[in-house]
Amino acid sequence: MLLDWDYMLSKLPLIIDAIPRTLLLVLVSAAIGFILGFLLSIVRSYQIPVCSQIATAYISIFRGVPLLVQMYLVYFGLPEVFVHLNEAFAVTFFPVEFNKTFIALLIFSLYTAAYQAEVWYAALRAVDYNQMEAALSVGMTLPQAMIRIFIPQALVSAIPNFANLFIALFKQTSLAFTIKVIDIMAVAKMEAGSTYRYLEMYVLIAIVYWVLILAFEQLFAYLEKYFSNHKKLSAVSKG
Image 1: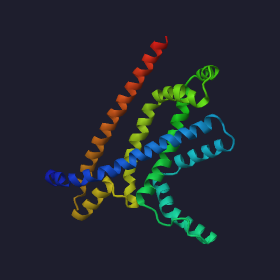
Image 2: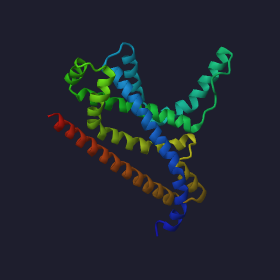
Image 3: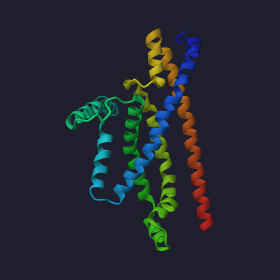
Image 4: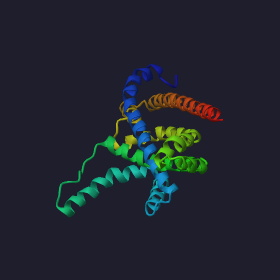
């Protein structure tokens, strides 16, 4: 047989043990990117002086530079920068060694925030601004109007795009092994290197990734349906 399925099944527990670390990278990075992306979109939407230009430059850089290059720049560059800062100011305040998982989370969060900012920006602009004026006219504050009116409506139209970004991020976290984070990809690579069963190990993790992503696709499909139905019910009740 081309594939040794018994061997693959014997290695499955090793891959399963690495799933929590992969999920940590994905879920934490997606959550931070979701919040940071929203803040960036608000800065751009309201054209806040200086901050708007900084946000635009941030989005352009993180979308324009390959993710792997960003990982290497931070992984190898950040300690070097902090060493020079410690020497320049004669202090030991800045750390020169970092937890590899922390570096991966930092990069994935900043990277996905740039893309989520674009999704948020488009979603917020799609909501009729007259609703904001109406909310403010009845005494709502700007934060209240955003939380009660703008954000819920924007989420309904943005969920499919957020789902695509989440799935893309899930697959991109496989690059974490390049900075020695022991995730699914790293375990497969180490096992394949020690046994020379590259095909079996990579087919195995392909199946694992596929199953995990299918599960999240179903979750996002449910969320999209739920929020769409909720929006329809709200419209009917108001009518």
